[in-house]
Length: 35
Length: 285
Image 1 (cartoon, helix red, strand yellow):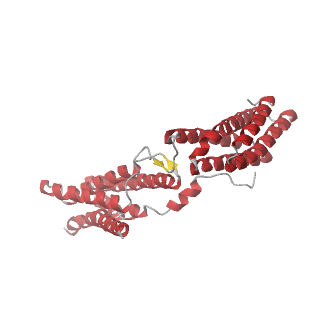
Image 2 (cartoon, each protein chain N blue to C red):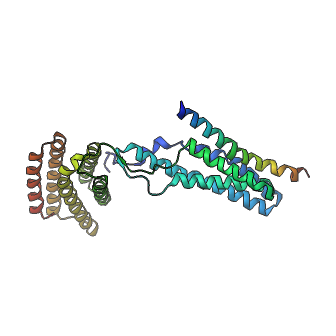
Image 3 (cartoon, rainbow over the protein chains, first blue to last red):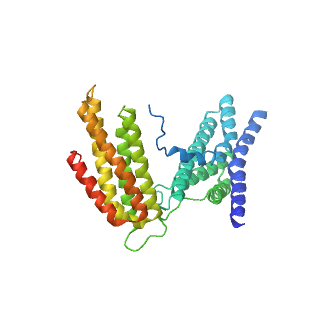
């Protein structure tokens, strides 16, 4: 149970941080592209 | 070419084939950003995002090396902790990279630094929870008094080096029959090492056996391989001699292995003396 929870929390954190910041980098480009 | 398969440690790596793929997939949008920045002609952004993507890929590759080493560590009953903490290095690289990328996305404003650091720390925590960090302690299961983990690991390392040397020399020998026999000998040697890993108390009885057998086989194989390389035709006498030595080694080793597993100390020593005498007579030792 604790192991599964650790894995799920770890997965979500990786997804939100690495995945989130990667996606954010694309959105960062949008204003200059629109402008 | 012999049809028999030689021992290949990479077979074990197959289990870890897909582990860490997430670390390659999650940063893919950064590559898109780098390409878009390049199209826009934004040199700094291109370099930064391109570099960040490369750092992610490097981090994922380092992490996979860590997964492989940890897999070997877990597979063995006794093992040293990995000397280089690949997973920790990868986690640090990935989290620092994430923090930098987040700061860049916030246009490098000073007020965004705490947020970027927090994101980096969360990435490190995510890695540590999901993949774990490197094992730090040597693993020793059921070691009896009188045999230390260093003693066992040193003996196993030394034996592994000799087996690898025999394998290397074997690759220089084109005779398929000799090649197959040497392959059987090295795989038996590896089985012996496995049995010592299973029960490290066997080391004291196997020490002499491993030394005489492996040293003898290494010397004779390397000697034969050298002669074989230097000349087109190998003298028949040498071929016969080598074949006889291999016969003895293979046959004796099979018996020794069985005896070792039966824990029959007396027979083991007697047969070792016979093998040692024979190797000396053949000029191997």
